[in-house]
Figure 1 (cartoon, rainbow, N blue to C red):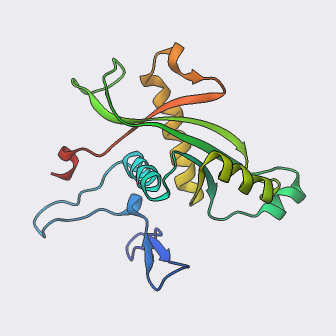
Figure 2: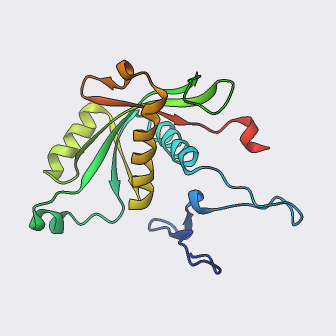
Length: 182
């Protein structure tokens, strides 16, 4: 599915069902003909996707991989694609920071993350997921990159001493609030 005006991809046919998967990060909605279109920052949609996946899969750790994975091609070229490991450490906290443009606190999810090679022994990866209770999320590469960018940029909201936990980087991703719903 593509926008008739600009041609951007808005969704795709669902592989498992008889419907479509809509990329909410690309959609703006008009509540009535006389109102302007409303859209939300991609970071909030990505956080929403992480939190709903946490609820539906019953896990807090995920491997995030590209939808368009070409493992054989990456191995032949000697350049493995990178995946992200995410650990949703605290799904709902309020923070305030001098780096924010807002006067009051904001709702965020505290996420630990790290880059890891996407390719490897598939059976070993499956075993690790079962033992560690880890899920897998596939995303279009542009959304995966937007997530990585949001994770990296959010470090500005955290004091220098709190930006790392063992081998994990620490991030804060914004959440939807009642005010976002209008």
